[in-house]
Length: 121
Image (cartoon, rainbow, N blue to C red; front, side, top):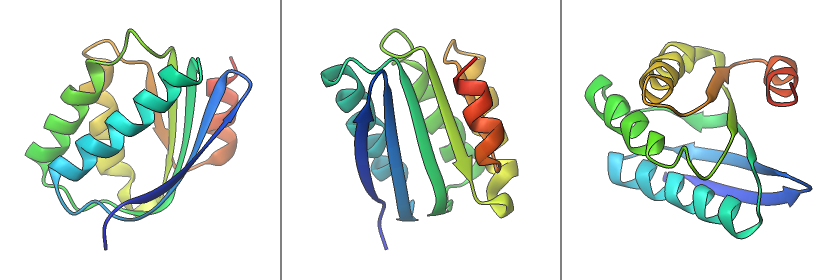
């Protein structure tokens, strides 16, 4: 099953509800591009991704490449909060480290409340 998502812009925040499975690095890159394009189109400076229903299946190297890829869009958004299923938090934190080290302000957590508090600071 591939990644499916719904994007809803509200004020300066883009809300993304995601489910399925990240079957390939290419699919994850396309997902990232679609979100960034929607943020740019809607003048959204913050992105809140609810990925609790998304199964992470990339290798460590692919996760590194996905974080590196996403970081190139740091000039278009201020903050990205990602809420993942707790069983994937280790992969999510690795992605966060890769992207953050390259200039993207992203926080990955398994808590909706932590994500909301962080993105609204």
